[in-house]
Length: 238
Picture: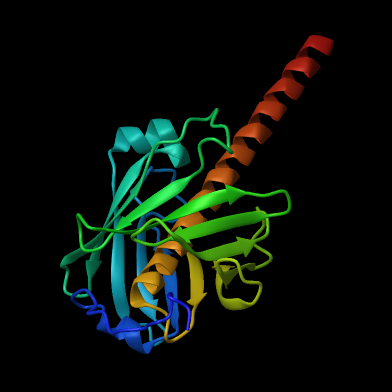
């Protein structure tokens, strides 16, 4: 039996006992102003397959950070259970636009309970797609998430497979689905997976979406730059 499966009972954080009984969680991004260009803080909800609320993730950052740094900003996320009690804390550091991918990987740290490290999600750059490592509370890599390059189209679902580190057989999936209003993720994992690793996989779905939005933002900036250069060349030619 691998160490990332339950070898002994671990008492879950308050309000999270249901995680022991499920093998699927839905993660949805909640957008306050549909179609608005306002720079709102990010909000996510983690739901059980029965649409029952499990966790709510709320970004804590200033308007200035969101306006000037955009998707590269640093942010903290407070995570509360269904009773509104603070049970987790997520932290992602600021990334500059000139980041060198191999020496400064994107990372999200997770504390549960608040103040106690539970693990982290780290991006590892590959030639043929994205790989993300899930590290446990001892900084050991336990799970890998592998998937395609982020797509900028809403026509297809993005499927990321979950593997035990060093193994080739998939044990779960994170599926990114696009609807007309919100981004949503379906996270499938083994029923007997340690509940702390289940929590990390839920956080990984949020991390994946934030990285996807970051690359989408970079693509749009590049398109605007090319359009500006093309327009400038046309004006000079005229």
